[in-house]
Image (cartoon, rainbow, N blue to C red):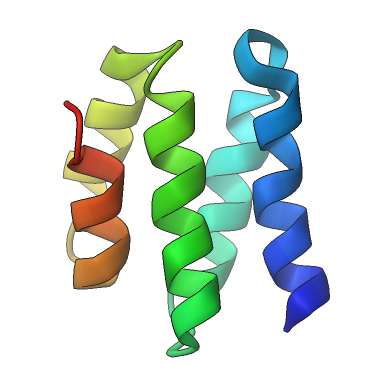
Length: 80
């Protein structure tokens, strides 16, 4: 679980140079998990990426709202 979580939040260190497609792919691959720390990591990663790419994150979260957990969605949209 911690390795999967690390794969998601690893992109945070790249800020504006994060691989957006990879970040979104990782979020979708793990969005079915019920583990709190995975759900929180997805929301956290999306929220942080929204600081440099708000339009892309808004689009991604709206398109995948039914797939993302409530926690992930709320965290992603927190500052949008």
